[in-house]
Length: 324
Length: 281
Ligand SMILES: Nc1ncnc2c1ncn2[C@@H]1O[C@H](COP(=O)(O)OP(=O)(O)O)[C@@H](O)[C@H]1O
Ligand SMILES: [Mg+2]
Image (cartoon, rainbow over all chains, first blue to last red; front, top):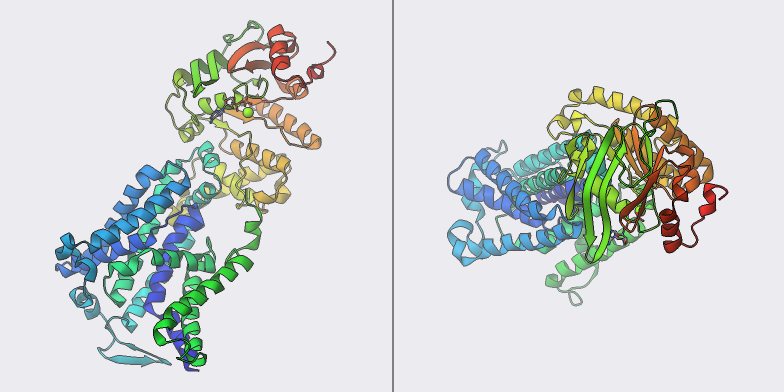
């Protein structure tokens, strides 16, 4: 029973919301347009830095958000400009490298004053102004079976803001994917040259998709950092990989796939950890080994899912039938 | 053809000037490394007519199509559409100018429905703008017009019953039809069809030919690539023959295959090309 509450708690946690957001962004890239962005964590990290640094230096919240969005947009344009004219794999290579570069830059000692190097930026330095806005009390609050702090870090306040943002972005994806604009992107996913031959400026559309998805990634980064701190090493390649995993798990190119994928992913991690700690004696598996073991097991489960239900939980099996 | 045959005074020779050319090309050269794919000195397409571009495999027909539509860039040359140079113009802009093409290897957008394929072909849909996309009011009416137009075309191409199926579930021939119907959604002045009949079963071929003739009756200029001389003779007003990148002959379909150079080109490259198809020698 405790495990069930833990699961539900994980399902609504801000981290889950943050990953859902990042996956919605990736859904614009991959699900809608077929772009292989292998550096979503880079967009997230830029968003965190943009927000945290602006606010730490005394800027208001709205300015922090604008700076985060602008950083991601500029990053997207810089990555897309040389690669979106080329074959898809170039974007994949460039994004994976560029995201790592952002992380290394952030870690570098030279930028210590700005980014805090490998230690990152402490939560206390930038979370204050957001937490002041909280309508919840400044203490632990129990709503139903769940207890979070009212305002600090992983709080009810952040749960509210995070999931509201998820709701807005789901709405955004829904509106855009069902519009003529989204139709052009889907066409590009299927065959760029066909779309060119119909008079659409493919390059411009791919750029728009890359930027909008990256900007949503930056918002995801802000939500994530408000629940923890700015930590360059938490936004490495594994993070990008998880975002991909949960997008494919939920179902790419579906409206709710990224959200469901994120919930399933984080809950199954908690489930596996809970079951393992309950049934496997510590002599066999120490508590430090529990985390990597759970991740590995979740990985295997996901592999099975991808093999047996490749379209994801919400995807349409029919769509996979044509692979030409 | 009627008494106003636009080809009445056109000489039967390569690069012959036309009465009212919609396309002209000069000195278009395209090399791939040492290989000369296209080397066209002069070429004109008569407005409002059906022109067939024929030639053995590897003659450079598809490459020439790519050059004329901006999908490939030549090492040198000039080419005009409606009197405007299209040199360096992007494929999308060429299409928007009113010259739309199809591909030898069909490009149906598989994971989109037939009707969505068709809608994508339409022009002047403001909802294709990112910001306008948020406000359905701005584009819902145009969407209705487009859909109605698509229904008419789909009925004509016998694809109406399939309109909600994924394009990927269509047969090869139906995809060819869809690609052609989709190209017509923008109401182009000229369509360029690269082997529209290839892989289409004989029953569909008939209606495809009818569609092409119908296009001409509506005033659309058609340039198409085809291997089968039967088809070429059935519908084309004028035939241009390419071999090894050059235009080696032009003329009306009834006589062009009698040209010695044409016979040599076909025999030289393709011993199995059935020249008898053009009728008794
Ligand atoms: N992208 C390319 N790279 C190298 N060679 C090419 C390329 N495209 C076409 N060719 C060559 O150019 C010649 C003309 O090809 P193509 O235009 O496809 O002929 P056709 O359509 O008349 O059969 C062929 O020899 C072909 O191998
Ligand atoms: Mg060809």
